[in-house]
Image (cartoon, rainbow, N blue to C red; front, side, top):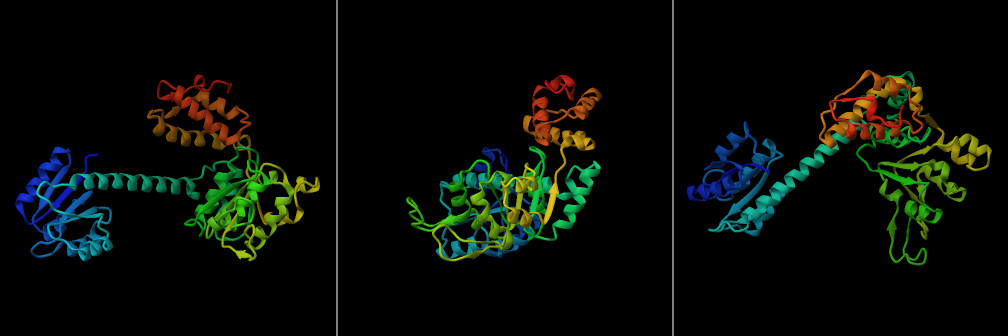
Length: 389
C-alpha cells in the first residue's frame, strides 16, 4: 500500500535519510523540523502515519502526541529517539503511540515497524468498513418493505426495539429470513452493542446442546477437566438466538423454561443459579401451537416465548419486494465478483415476480448470485436464471 507518512525531526540529516527510505517504497512523504509545523499541517492534511522524534526544541514528542489525540485520531504514530527511557516508552503507549523505537544510523528496524503499522492500519480500516456495513445491513430504515405485510411487520419491530428483555418468537417457512430478522431486532435495540449468540437446535445432539448452552464445571462429567463457559455466559448484555426451537428434544425444552422466563440457569455440575442479562429470540419453521397440541412441544415454553410472536411472510406473498431485494443482492455480488451488472430486463422481472420461490428469500439470493456469475453484459436476462422459468 502507498501510505501518506510525515517525518518530524529537528535533525535535517535524519529527515533526509527517512525521506529517501520511504520514497523508495513509493510512499507519499512530507517532513517537518518541529512539532508546531506538524500540527499546523495535520489540520488540513491528516496522514496515515507519523514518525515523530521524542526530543526536539519547542514541543517535545510527548506533547505533540497529546495534541494529535484530538486532531487526528486515525493517524498512527511511531515515536523515535536516540536516548529514550522506559518511562518515555510507557508514557508514549499510554497516549496511543503505535510503537517506540531507538534511532540508529542505519535505520535498523524502522522499515519493519512501518510495514507492521501499515498492515495494522489496513486491518483497522477493513474491520471498520465491515462493522459499518453490518450496521447498515441491519438498520430498520434499510429493510426492504414495499409490500403491505412487510410494512406492517417493520412497524411492529419499531415498537419492539424499546422492550429489550421481552422474549420474541419468529415463525415462518424455511428461507424467510428469521435469523436475519433476529439480528435486526438485536442491532436496533439497546442490546445492539452486546453479543449476538446463536445456538442451533437442528444440528446438535441433546447432550451437545446442553453442554454448549449452559457450560459446565470441572468434573461435571468424564473429560470435563476444567470449567467451560457456555453460550449463555457469552450472551451477557446481548441476545441469545435459539434457531429452530421446534426441532429441540422435549427433555431439552424443559431446561429452557427458566432461561426464557427469568434468564436463570445453572452450569452442568454447578450448585448455584446464575441470573443473566440477555434477551431470548427463538425461531421455528414449525407451527408451534400445532406442535403443542400434538405433544411435541411444551406448552409452558410456548406461552413464555409467544409473548410477542412474529410470522415472517413467504416471498410469494410479498411480490412488491422481489425486485428491490434482487437489486440489493446485485449490488452485493457485483462488488464481490467485480461485475458492473446494474439492470434487470422486463422479461426477467416478470419471470421473477411469477416464480413460486419455494426457498423464499434465501433462494432468491442464491439465484441472483448465480445469475451475476453467468451474466456477460450489464443487464440480467431470463437466460441468466436457468431453472426459474
